Length: 173
Image (cartoon, rainbow, N blue to C red; front, side):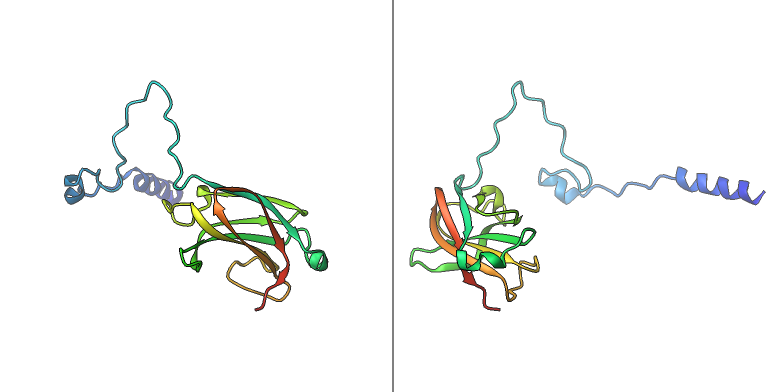
């Protein structure tokens, strides 16, 4: 009898529907649908739309190599971070990264490609002078610098192909 009573209670609880909150009239007056309701379905175009061009649209492509003197410090499975930072008109490298990528090392040389798809903040232009830094990071944490980490840096201008970054500098913690 108890089991039947519990079953009825569970069914009754599942059958209750939560009342919908009132629409956000302030948001609706701005031409936006109320929170929790998606926009009205758009008409299906006769032909597929072309993808929107990426901000800045250029790419940086090349290879990453390890200096022979440091080759024994890099192992398969190590984490590699690739960071692009803007360079201003005075030649100063900006602190905030524009674009980043992360990869697991398999072997060298290692091909890379950075584009607007790798920008950290959507809509940030990926164009102009940049400093590329590749870093082998032993603990896999982007924010740490440990003994055994190795990096290499090169200045480039977006777009550019045939870039070579040489991992030749032990990182100072």
